[in-house]
Image (cartoon, rainbow, N blue to C red; front, top):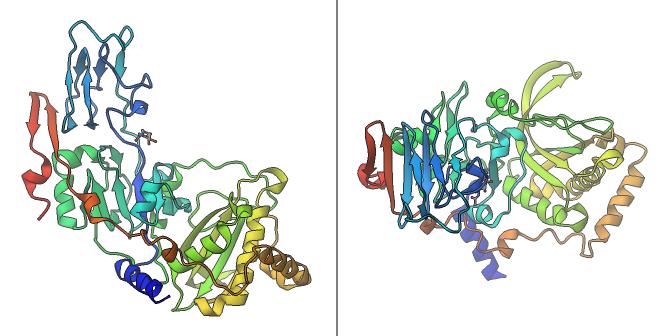
Length: 438
Ligand SMILES: *[C@@H]1O[C@H](CO)[C@@H](O)[C@H](O)[C@H]1NC(C)=O
């Protein structure tokens, strides 16, 4: 037991900040990614490669390739990993068919504010291991305290256009993590940065984490128009669709609003819900998005008189038709029950839910309370454990859940060829040239 406490303490020191995620950009402009080619496959020895002349692009090349020829863009860059390159095979490539003209797809329209182009995770390990977090649309794109990750050994082109500056905690590009605003703006104006980032708004990094243990507001509501312009909402089949804060679409499911006090811990509560409820087989199809939101207070439901902060827990299931939202609703009832029983120990003062069936906790407090509580107790007993055992702290279970492994960000040696009007130029790796490691 003593040992376990030491482990927890150690992890708390390493990761004292709440409610921030790693957000990884999904698309890349890698030569080896078949989805980047109009023919759907990576060009081989008998093929002719074409980059659109007027398009700016930074292409990462990981291995060596044989081709019959290559048309280069006016302003572009090939980042050659060590050991990669291009050559022409005399007599053709027997494994390559008769040869086609393969065109590199245009990455120009991929937008920073498109929620479908990001993955979110609570740690780098989870990001690499494929354990992702679901978020409302506004929080699917990077928030002010998030670490933004562009995969190592890859390049990209992202359109950052909006009416505001874009601020994040850090940005990792080509295996190098930028946490200082001056270093990153220097990178943005380098041959690499200006081809990878384009659009009206500069991205800046603050290096600051969310220092509020009760969570931080994402602050992307100011970018709502840019974000929601990229989202297409599905038709809904439930009786009373909900409008979660920060989401672009109405949903079938349930929303739990949690009011908290100063000893509430956002990350612990997320872990509590994951371990106590979402890990149960019956809830395996339920997605949970938890966020701190600002809610307008209204007098008599009409006159606004200020705002309060709450924790919003959005629950969606993948059921359709008549069943849409039912599983989410039964989970919402369990979460509210948990707050009634244990809320005071975990810094929660009250919670209520609304479901797309029309049900809500006000109805639960009324005449059907006996039935509801009975059903909830029944399902809790079915867990097989004592009810008051608390929850498994995942930090105990996974001592490897470190926020970050220093070695991961070691700079890899990359060589670069810059293509311009006048020809092909080799440049030194940017880090050596401009001393970003200082
Ligand atoms: C190739 O690109 C697609 C689409 O951008 C992306 O989803 C996929 O992860 C990439 N593949 C690899 C191996 O990185």
